[in-house]
Amino acid sequence: MDLGAVTQRSALHAKPSGLVLQYGTAGFRAHAGHLDHIMYRMGLLAVLRSKQTKSTIGVMVTASHNPEEDNGVKLIDPLGEMLAPSWEEHATRLANAEEQELPRELVGISEREAVDLQQDAFVVVGRDTRASSEKFSQSVIDGVTALGGLFHDYGLLTTPQLHYMVYCRNTGGQYGKATVEGYYQKLSKAFVELTKQASCSGDEHRTLKVDCANGIGALKLKEMQQYFSQGLSVQLFNDGTKGKLNHLCGADFVKSHQKPPEGMEMKSNERCCSFDGDADRIVYYYRDADGQFHLIDGDKIATLVSSFLKDLLVEIGENFNVGVVQTAYANGSSTRYLQEVMKVPVYCTKTGVKHLHHKAQEFDIGVYFEANGHGTALFSKAVEMKIKQLAKELEDNKGKAAKMLANVIDLFNQAAGDAISDMLVIEAILALKGLTAQQWDALYRDLPNRQLKVKVADRRVISTTDAERQVLTPPGLQEVISDLVKQYRLSRAFVRPSGTEDVIRVYAEADSQANADSLAHEVSLAVFQLAGGTGERPTSGLCG
Ligand SMILES: CC(=O)N[C@H]1[C@@H](OP(=O)(O)O)O[C@H](CO)[C@@H](O)[C@@H]1O
Ligand SMILES: [Mg+2]
Image 1 (tube, rainbow, N blue to C red):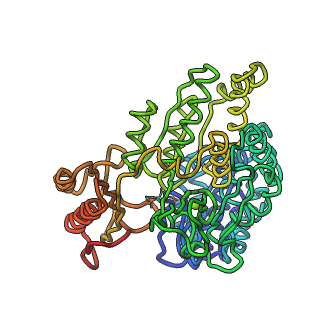
Image 2 (cartoon, protein in one colour; image 1 turned 90 degrees about the vertical axis):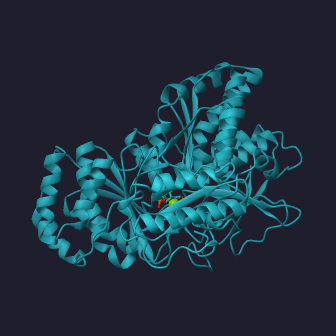
């Protein structure tokens, strides 16, 4: 390791004194002014991880749905997955080390992780459309080359596209070609094949309105649309030509405010969807004939997808085990519908896609979605091979179903939740089933719910268990929450420290919106009192 080069260059990427950042649920995120040294150091860390795993590692520069002024960075592990937890700790240590400590930290990580320093390293880099992202990707590359690593800079990519590239590169091209063109072709081919099988009753040429959050999704969807235009026309809004990234638009805005994005013209009963700023989340929505807005979130996407997959499995007569993975934020109605009506086993994990992804890998077919629209479906290798073989062998309706399944497998991005891939999956399913957005929405009715945020002096005072549904500390808080919940019908509430913001998140649901709001408010007050709230006491009627 040429530690001289590391030190020399680190002076060009100086750490602001006193700044402490943590590798959280989605890597590092902060105001862009605080991040240059982090980028450089993540380039260094990616080299060590690449040497240790003898694989290509990804580094994505993005802050997803956060404001334009922020930025962030995360590492992508060999199979397109989020960075392993023990390396998250290394990332945090490296990020916070003083400059003169850097060489020692790098040696320490290499020793602890038994990194073979003679091994070559290869890192792929991608970035979103933020003004600071281009310069930051250069800082990452500075870190990579300081440790002698080789790299490929993909430039502008959606986050899931970079996950896909990493996965392709580390599986010898079996998963697909590791180019943007390869991604477009693989997904579009599967989509066009699928929609050819649809009877297209009524809606001969399908159209969809897409709010791209003024982000990278707009650029990539514009490039890609010619590949799938046979099966779907997309009309892009908030494409970045005028508006500001994530400002009053995008999947996070629509989900948390439960209203349409600015800048989109919605006619009644038109199917619309929103991506977030790095295009790894998607939510759908429509306005009914009375002008009322209806959100179709990640829970309903998981329901649509798993019911479609189950029907196809019944048709071909295969009894694979299908599981759905959610977090505590999943609407109670969705969990009940999946378990009681669809008879699908449902599991709850901690928030953050890495937890859902790992759980989903335990099934033959694992479908996972966060309520906010981040998710995908995973198919075990054995299942994938079996289905692709059946698609060749079976005939008639069974053969048709097996071919559909084979195409759906290719259409999902199994490396990560992906707004573009999920959009095409959903559009194909709706076309094949002849469903309108309203009919999809009518599968079950969401329980009214409310999310709030509470500021506390130190959010680590709240610890949780049972997939974040129960509070362990501070003492007494869980009892208060349980008592409050008992005072409402069909109610549920939990609190947890956010992994991406310095707040405690409060979630409540109940039989009416007024009751969900009131329960969320009372729980917020309990958090404020028992967990060291700062600033103003929570007032009722606040939307988190
Ligand atoms: C309630 C909620 O939506 N939480 C989000 C948010 O995490 P927090 O730990 O709640 O801040 O950001 C994560 C990363 O994007 C995402 O995975 C997660 O679902
Ligand atoms: Mg995102």
